[in-house]
Length: 134
Length: 134
Image (cartoon, rainbow over all chains, first blue to last red; front, side):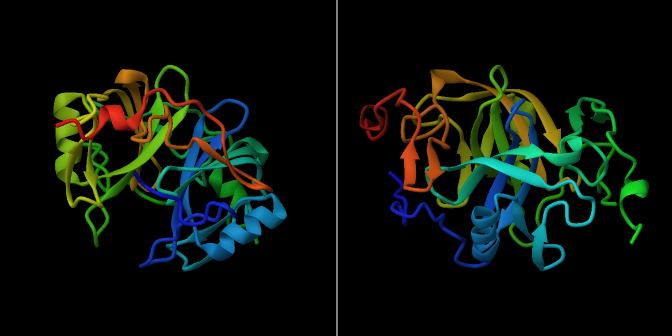
């Protein structure tokens, strides 16, 4: 059976190679899975301290304070750790109603079907109106 | 904006380094997040062909047909791909009522609290009775 490395503090086990844990983000009210992101230790600490979701962007190689550009921050209501302590589940209140930078509530807005991917959600906002204004 | 590499087929973008995508697994009926796992191309293909969840176990370095030891297979009802196409959301019917090898319905059975981790679920089965019998 897997063991939690840091049970008293609840600190997850960051990957030995890249220093990250996977974070699944779920709408606290509806249970909809909004996105998957990653945290390093700094992002984890700041999330706990601020109550707002902070990730580590692998693409940008830096801390990513969710909503820093769009204003669509995530207020963290509950955090869970999985059995291996290398994945987190965050239940959040999504400000602005959309987690995805493509303008959808969830990043999982496309379903795999026998005919290929099918968009199964409506856009909440137009990305061209939210990003790139600065 | 991020682009899907393989829109016609719906094949996700496997990581260039380790060949994996992250898979979030959600109970199709209740919306509870059950676990996080990974798939390589072989696991993906077999999942689509069989309708049962197949992952790639990083710890064991091989395909992991979920439930192969416990019998607790996952019948895949729907699959979604995220905006970057490097994460999947599987909605499944969890046979046996528990996804976690620790005997809990969800691997996320511990909540982060100011006093450390707190177990917030009841065990569905006793792991010592399910594993290691062969």
